[in-house]
Image 1: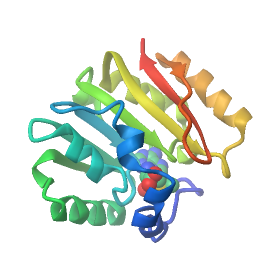
Image 2: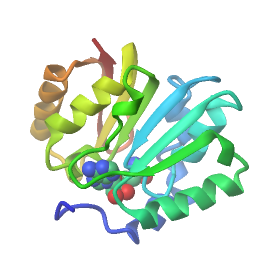
Image 3: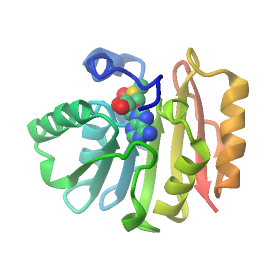
Length: 185
Ligand SMILES: C[S@@+](CC[C@H](N)C(=O)[O-])C[C@H]1O[C@@H](n2cnc3c(N)ncnc32)[C@H](O)[C@@H]1O
């Protein structure tokens, strides 16, 4: 595991309802996620955004959540089950060096990359996997915490994303975050 991966106990803080005051999942995800979509969420932690995505995709949709840490996934599954959306969730454990989502090639309608990419040691490989999973023209919302990631580092990641086939289309405002909407070219 990379040295700077978020410790599992921080997952409880990130999934706290108090966070909704500054990161309202409905407002953040609403413009991108609609009923019937298949959405990908790498690094979901304990599912702060996952529950809202499962709600937004509706009974015909699917959320694929992939985290490195089994403890994060254990709590995420519990939260999604409690919300009544278990049948819309596919929760998987990532491998150390890759997400391992070759089976999803071209199938995903949206990806959420929230506060995770700075923890990934090989960003080019990671972003290539995301690009492969998205169908052409589909979008990813990419956000990094401004407290941990400099503007320069964020711009470097956007350049890497572009090389991987994910072009920055717009810059939505998200509290204390650098953010961009990426389009699969
Ligand atoms: C800072 S937390 C953010 C959690 C969530 N996205 C949120 O905003 O509440 C980062 C999460 O990404 C996971 N993670 C880090 N590197 C990863 C990788 N290479 N593949 C999958 N998950 C990863 C960590 O285990 C952790 O759950």
